[in-house]
Structures are given as C-alpha cells and as structure tokens.
Image (cartoon, rainbow, N blue to C red; front, side):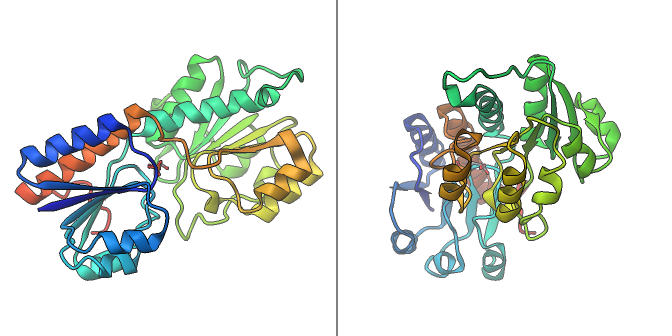
Length: 306
Ligand code: 3PG
C-alpha cells in the first residue's frame, strides 16, 4: 500500500525516519509530501494514495474525491476538525486520530503562554507570578489534565470543568470541579481552553464569559480560534483594560486586537502547540502504527467516523 505523509508544517526528521521504518518494515511504501503551499498541490498529490498521515492539513471532500484508492486517513494529533468526516464516511474512508500523543507539548505551551503574559511578554514592565493563582481548565481531557498537573506543581490552585466527565473523575485528576462555565470564568485568574472545534463549540466563548473573569485575568487558548467569538473578545478587552488574551491560534481580528490592546494580546504566527520533536515523533509513529495495524488486522480502535 502507498502511504502519503502530507504535512504542510515541518515534521521533525526523527518523526519522518521513524514513520518510514514502520511503514517499510510492514511492506508498504512511504511518500513524503511536505511544506506545500496551496490546497491544489495537496489535491494533486493524493491520486494514488491508499492511506494518508496528516496534521492540520485540510482533507476536504475535494481531496478525498481526488484519491480513489484512499482507505484510511490518520490525523497525527488530536483535533480532526480539518477533515471532512462526512465526505470520508460516504466514501468508506476510515478516519482516526492519535489522542494524547502530542498532549504534553500543547500543555507546556499553555503554561508558557501564562508565564509570558504574566511577565508582560518579557518586556521590562513589572510582571506577576503564577504561584498562588487559580487556573480554570475548560475541558479536562489529555491536554487539560496535563496542564492541571503542571500548574499544580507550580503552586497554582486548579479548577476544571468537562461536559463528558462527572465531578468525581475531575477530582480524581487533581482538580476542583466547578458546576458551570460561569463559575470557571468568574473564579479563575487564568482560564486555559482545551475544547475541540465543533458546530456546538464554535464561537461559544465570548463577551459573557470573558467579562466575568476577575481583575487581571488571562485567557489562554491553545485549542482552536473558531471557539472564540472574536467580537465578544474585543468588547471584553475594550471594557476591561486589566484582561489579557494569549492564543496559539491567531484570531482573524488579531491585527486589530494588537493595535488596540498591544501587549495585552499575543498569538503565535502559526499553530505551534504540537511543534516539538517529541510530539512529532509520538504522534507520527502512532499514526504509522495505526495504519499498518489497520491494514494487517482491521483494528479501528481510534476511528472517529464510525
Ligand atoms: C492537535 O489537534 O493535535 C494540535 O492542535 C496540533 O496540531 P498540528 O499537528 O497541526 O500542530
């Protein structure tokens, strides 16, 4: 089978060689299609692929239609909002992710952004410490739990909420469960967002929640830009000169936010949360193993479009 590794963002060399070894040892071939610039290049590259490994690359209906042999797509990472699941399912293409494999990298970045904003983006302005402050974690999955553990080790009080976990499970994970989002946002100096982008979560965090945050609070988004209501964010930052926003995913109105609010806002130029060698290796090798195993045994444990 021909497995196409299609990653627009650079993937660590160690990840690529590890993927190659897994694929070729199982008798398959690996083709690498990396750092491409346009979606049409991706469409042109998938023609004879039986399987694909991608990151945030957009696997649209057009990509799937251009790949008549395609049987499986594995997103080397957690969020699969970049894949048209309906188009894949209609064609019988299995879609999987590799949950947890890049979670530590994202969690480290979330903590880094908290410190960066508390120290006024490393300018000489007097900053503040995170020890003794309260962090609220919105969604206590693989990334959220790691953020909680790291924050706790740094002397922070940790609260969390997750629509899929009952309070006892959150407490077992080392965080104090809160009853609703209003309590999370109003009771935490930092809120770290770890929800997926879905039709239900789109623009779900806006003025109402953000303006509830206590004085000097920082909102950190290492999830997806789509979960933020950008006009609501702008309004909250306008009304509350003490609030700050940091994101691994620049909002569409970032230039406007930056010119109005300066060092109170920050966004990475590209989504960098999982951009470590370790995360690339963990997620990339897991993706390769999942494809090899699927072709050998039909194992579809991580399928997300059942
Ligand atoms: C994920 O959903 O796994 C992260 O957002 C990482 O995305 P990336 O692989 O595009 O860096």
